[in-house]
Image (cartoon, rainbow, N blue to C red; front, side, top):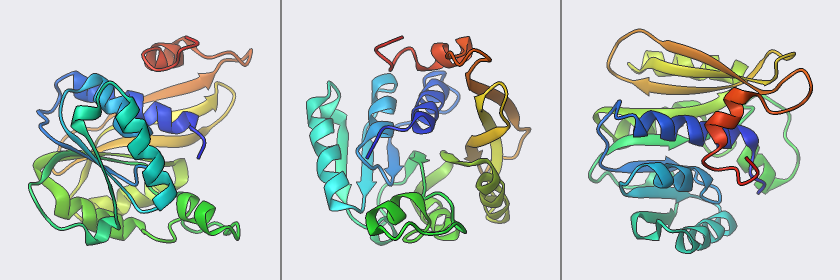
Length: 221
């Protein structure tokens, strides 16, 4: 699978949040890890164990290889399984997930692509149930979704007692409307800290804010 810009934004935004010390974290869970991008980005900034769970065997194999090739292999663990069947253990202080996109959209007809881009295997309600089961009291979670779907997820999360504490609204460029949102959710009530980010400026160059956020990860910056 390709590395998506929006996933990089989620990883960088979340890593920055965790590195700021806003929450004390001793263990992180990455749900639907794909090839391990988010786990690697968090491990680069936060020195705690990260457990990555991925259902697809090919993606899981690639993620495990990526972990072993990284400087943070000693604190990255990949498990290939269905997160819904993952037994409860020591709860995680923080969960990050880039869940299936476009729950109500047309399917592509390609099983692996559908699994990655649609909520075919893990709907938002099921995802929240998993988060609820694996998250420690006082823990928080980071979720990336398309802007419209994010509002659907936010409503479902609210019904389960989760509050949106921090959100980054993402635009493809300064000329576009919002197309993605990254949210930090918690069961601790409070105001929502809202910010926005445009990837490109009016001249189709990266904006200074995007470059500042992604500079620790993008070699070309």
